[in-house]
Image (cartoon, rainbow, N blue to C red; front, side, top):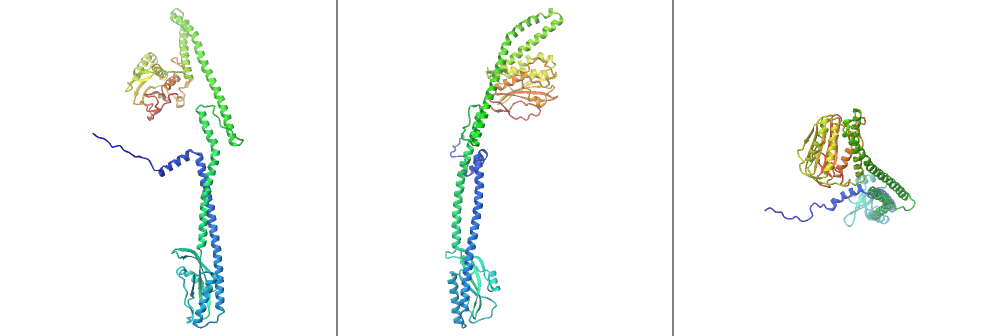
Length: 544
């Protein structure tokens, strides 16, 4: 025997970092408050970043320039002090020149307050036995560029500088500059003088300012976000309230109103909205009252007309049964009176039925019904009328033999109305009544090959007392309410009636009834017309 192990754990649950983009997109589409806060916060953050970067760059530039000016001034003072010391000496032997050179280096170090000092004898000078050897610096070795040395060598008395990275005791590097000039040593010639100035303290100051600026910018963004959220919420809440109120009004709660506070624009919006709601409520009440009066009038008139109509019908039947005793003219008059009395009685019945639907007082008396049998009975009852108009009725039922819970009287009335409409407009051509079913629905269609209708006329075919061709008289005594009542009967069952028609190609009316209550979309088992794409039929709700 095959069996399966139970599967435990969460399957198909995505981690939060995959779900939040979808939630963010959903919030962006559905929340005006979220979009406003997000856009405002993004623009504010961008502005803060631009301003902050501008300030940081400006401070860094000014700080570097001030430190560079101090370095150039210190280098210039150290060079002048050392040169004055050298110029005041008349040393000529090697020992004296060496001592004088060492004193000049000490003077440079003391005056510039820097220990990173290097001196190199300018090349291409006459050899000298007393010239001191070059003085190198561990920090400056490898950072003095050939271009800087060439500038010093070619321009006596000039001062030059170069940005470099100076090594520190921790094994790393610090930003700094090397200031270059030259001095002249007695009996030895010109020497290139390089002094290194470390800007580590300036870099630390700038880093501290950047840290404080970053923390301040982050706090400012958070503060702006909170302020924007509160302000937007204060503005959005009345709009959200208006949306909720409008939805409740649309749902039928006409007594709901927006709160009115203050005299600002939002209060004006609330007052205007409430005034509109009150006006709408008054108008709806007026229209509802007019509708009730109209329904009551139609119902009362129909009931009141039944008594005189019954009397007229009895008197007319007596005359109609004895019409053979009258002259030809009187006989024809009696026949016309009998026919119009019958039509008048049908019209009163249809008006009463319409008034019941308008008053929502219709109750279905359902029972298991076979639509094929019901349609066959309807065709049999209308066989004489079809023969009179030269039309042949044909029943095609490949499916649909299963019973369905419907009100047989109302479904029979639908079928008779559809067949009668096909006979009247079928131009004496064959009429096909088809029935089929599937798991979701049962469908019945009536097709004729008559004059057909334009698309805009087909959209109004269920309107009360409407005719596609007003000049065309009714040939079978209809009241003009048959198709309207048929649609109401179909909707009462949770179904619908679809129409396909083309001028010169005839018409197809298709009744679709769901097998179970509550189905919103069902696929009709019957095609509607030659261009039917088989899309599901959307059925109205049960309370429609």
